[in-house]
Image (cartoon, rainbow, N blue to C red):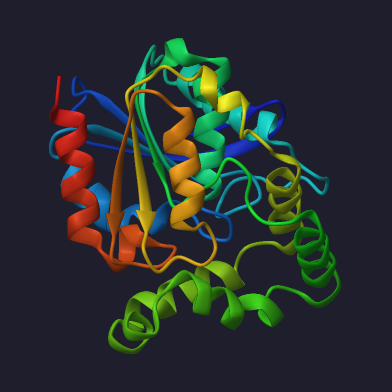
Length: 260
């Protein structure tokens, strides 16, 4: 489990799978950590060199007490690739991870083979919402937002039937440093890539959750309309579709990466 230095911030990285297999990077959402990908990594590491990491401000990575930018989050990915001496990799990001992936695909397309953007948007939410969220967690801590977040992240049926998974994600949220969450919230707040992603020419898979109120099907459709080589899949899930529809998500990703 290497630690990568990204301009003074330690980034926690976990690597699984055959050394000579194609590399696949998995990038977590706001308020989670690399363990949100446990189900995918278990399967994908049989065919891929899976590289998971905690976005700065999350998990075991450093959490500088300052606002972050999407450029900074993207450069963290490049620092990982450089440190691990990986010339090119597939990239899969969900929500904030997808926003990060768009930036990398725009500014360092030579480092990416195929791009998977899940439950994300070229612009996510409203600045007023993000400013309120930032102020709330810094003043009152993560606990006050957790239940509201879980209601948006999972459908009511899933919250009732998959209590263990929901409890695991609840713990991820509660253990995320408030200033790390706030720093990444600022990055999402300020990121508007709606027009810039039109420059992306990479083979791209866009995954949306039909029940996702945070990054809607319309948000995904906008990405698809801008990225010319993109494919579009909708799953019966809310925001964390990789957990709510784990098998379908993994199968969809695997099929996309397997195509020439």
